[in-house]
Amino acid sequence: MRRRGRANWLVVLGLIGMVVIVVLFLIGGRSATSVAAEFMSALGKHDVAKLTELSYMDGDTPEEVRKKWTYTTEVAAPYYRFRWQFLGESSAAPDTSAVRLWVWRDAQSPASYEEKFEIPMVKVDGQWKVDVRGLNRLMYPGLPR
Image (tube, rainbow, N blue to C red):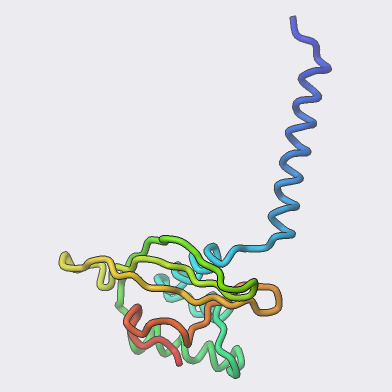
């Protein structure tokens, strides 16, 4: 026969552990890799709002960045399909990072093969953003400049 007190303590300890994990996640913020994953997903879905939110283009207003992403996704490459796989992340300084990945350009073609690219990341106001002007132009047609 079990004692009820022991089971209650296990539940309480489990809940405390979950709260600690959530607090650590919120304090630490999102990683450069998780932001890069959101960016690549938004790029694949042609989500201009999300691309604008996650992009860093020094000197451009959010409206200008939005216009550039609209042109890229609707005019330059409206039917472009690709796939990607993350390889890792390296950080040269606390506010810069590079996320390495393989990209299969023109994923619908059987001749498509993986190519290695990097997504340059920069911390702006405590949040990771993609340095769009540092992206290799071969990764996606018509990237904003």
